[in-house]
Length: 476
Image (cartoon, rainbow, N blue to C red; front, side, top):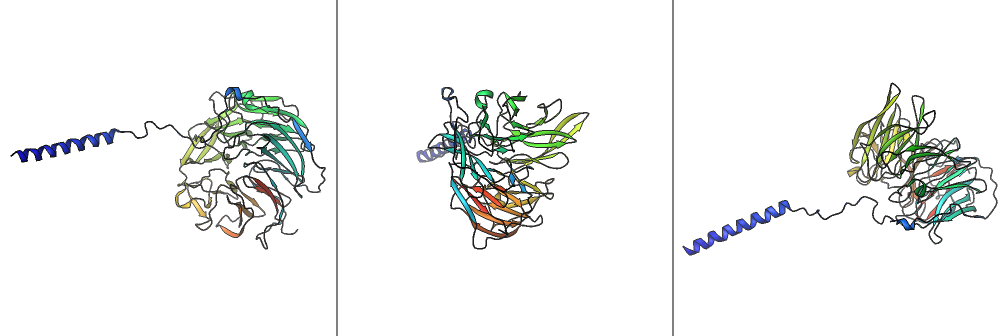
């Protein structure tokens, strides 16, 4: 009888212990002590108030050589003159690599992903010299790679997946750059003479983005258009004098993203479209309401935004971002002189076209992109969609032709697509299928993410520490 009682006691104890463990397991929150970790916040530079040194923007200059060129081609800003990443020159370009790429020159750069612009035989890039702690705006001969001049200034920048990652904007009279810590500099592109500089952090309280500045300046009618965040969402600066002509109040306290400003004309009204950390907005670009917010929407608001808005037809705007954000399609409308923006749909990167870093290309009624790594079975494939139906992928490059975070461009009816490791692919710009022509490794580097620049048949590209020039003309 005692033995029976002991057995019952053991059973009851086991049941009680099991229930206790189950309740503890059910109620226990293993992430209660975790802190939120946003993409890009790893190793994010912390700048204390006392460390906000006064930077003498453009303080130093050196001329190395004189230059003359007969070349007339230009690539004047991020995504080119028409903001579409399509080169419209009529120069026939190669469709295969033959004996190998015709590399004309290469130069060492500071670690980063900044890319150049091209203007009539010269290439300009904002570089960071880690040994000297300087942002340097450097000018090279497009044909030879010889450095012609450099203008620089001292500024401390800690390595954080690279430093410089912006593209200047250039006209025949002005060259505007933005450094990793939001220092804006305007010079004469012909001789490098300094015109003015602005520290957006000091003047507007700009919060430096996770991986430093990614926004590329814009010049419209000799006015530099910038989006500081902080006390002003957007500003227009006279390129000749540095005078701020207009400011857009930032009542929502949206912050600077890595995305760049894109122009849009809707029903005859010019506006600037910007995707900040906080939401997307349209700001008047002309008229009595210059600088006024015409519309805004914060329903799709990722923490990290690198691609820029893609302006579609009929008032539609496409936006995408990485780290699982996916894509979003908007519809702009106007009723009784009032603008409204409506979010039509959002979706995850496994459900439609998306991009982590590069901005998709719109071409012949189709939109193209390399899918991010979190796009499930289609990850890293080059894809095509109807932009009005971004969930419906019409074709992909397939499992055997995958790419990374590198750039892509259209020129002479061809796609040129650069992989992370420096492999350059040529494919026919076919809207019906992916048609591979040839590919080869053009550089032995890594993280070849900086956007292309192409003019006069000279293609400029870079990896994290080197820029090179390839002559891709079919007829030399």
